[in-house]
Length: 207
Length: 279
Image 1: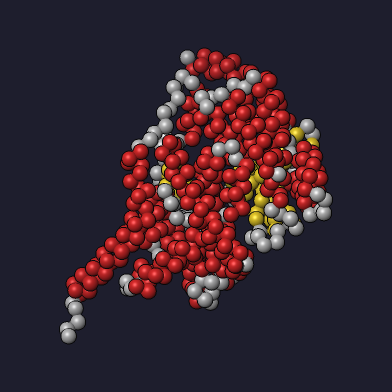
Image 2: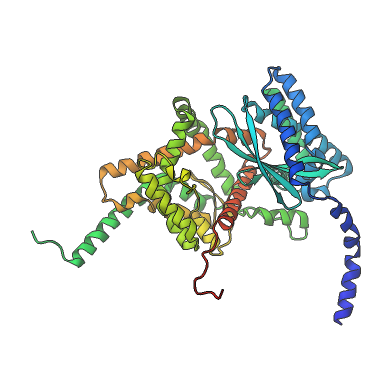
């Protein structure tokens, strides 16, 4: 009886076991490589933020940099979470496009307040599948902020997959924010897309 | 005049304590009574999605916010109070102070909370952290001139945080449903018990009741509120500007922050070796 249950269980789990190697391939980025990546990316970010370029030019440069150093599609899918299976392929494509735009707008908004910023890499520790690089960011007139950057290997390259401030994860927060919009609208992904478009229009008109 | 007997001293002490409790309770209720009555009047509960709708039902369970409609009403009210009162005050405070001054104010307020932290760490069974809170209070209240400076941190006793909500969590009490309280903001069925405990667990409670002490209590509470709000001007503005649903975002941030605090307490405090254990 027990043997039969074990065998049936093994057969039922076979597809999962077959999929395991694909997870195993996503190896943890070594601490030194992750620190070097964040140091380089941070220096690029600081040079854009502290440059004398116009606001529009800075926003364009930031957008380009974000797409280069952040795994935007992977973060987008994580943020969509359980609704990834509910969304149609067309809605998924639309979501990723809007997510790219919103992420760039949000980073541009946040970075405005950090003119004159500098950062120090303090170390790196593994957290789940990611290597988190700890940094201290300082800017004039503000208390120093401890910020963690979760780095993961995407298509053979290290990329940022999350930002952690005071124990709070940006991607989990965004995921909960978006899930609330969908659940408040009867589980419709279309409501989320509408809210994202509304937000982009709001931010674009404010800038 | 004959000095009171031991029973008399106890009676006097109890009377004094009761007066203090009454005074403090009246302050709490005068602040929060209108808001505390509202949940009863509104009694709004979220309607759970059908269990057959697995994705939505799972999301509902994970949110654990059955009072969401009522909570959202309080969020809107608090948001208005914040926009028209707290934020302008905090902005004005930032304009007339520098970051080092605000840090010293923060240190002073942190120091007043150290005895409560000591008690909570003891209740949590974290003697090392309790010792740190005790030494910090001792050093900062004396060498640190009443807590305005934080020499304890430089001497190897960094700030460690806890509260009664964390104590209950360590005792195994689950977080429970999310609550958004009038005036106080994000909380939960477990963390709400932190409010009365924090209110009474201050060194001022040991001093005899007086008008000056009451005024000091008001001033300290006001300064605490404004200094804390000033520290969060940027992050709160940022959430309001970038989130699709700021209420849900603050709820998520609150829960993550509490989980992280709990994890930090567990990671930091190394257990004291048992001297009777076999080696």
